[in-house]
Image (cartoon, rainbow, N blue to C red; front, side, top):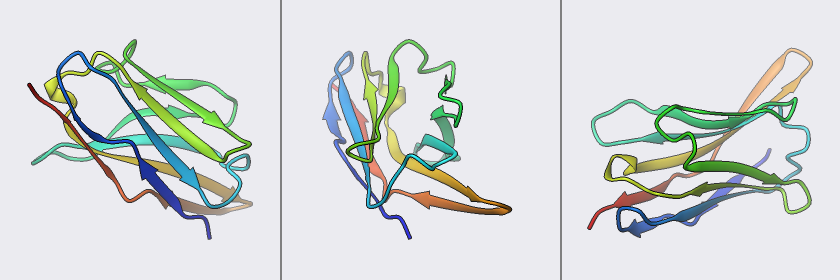
Amino acid sequence: QVQLVQSGGGLVQPGGSLRLSCAASGSIASMSNIDWYRQAPGKQRELVAGLSSDGSTYYVIAVKGRFTLSRDNVENTVYLQMNSLKPEDTAVYYCNMVKWDESTKTDYWGQGTQVTVSS
């Protein structure tokens, strides 16, 4: 069982930056997908950015050009660098990793990290 521990959230002014981290207790090299989601108050959880098994990244239009997802297979950690933050980026952010073993899918979730963008 892999556990994900998130860190790096907080309060930042509009235009500022934050870097979220998601440290896994096991190897992330075998993960099929690594994603970051967010959930704003009163809204559904939405996919923000992701990394596929082929190494390609994808971003929701609202964050494209501002957010960057990266991974460190040695440290078993993934990051979400968030620049030019806007008030509408305020949400709880979750990292998610998916592992496939033959036909069995396992989802792993971080505990969530609050990001607040406000002046």
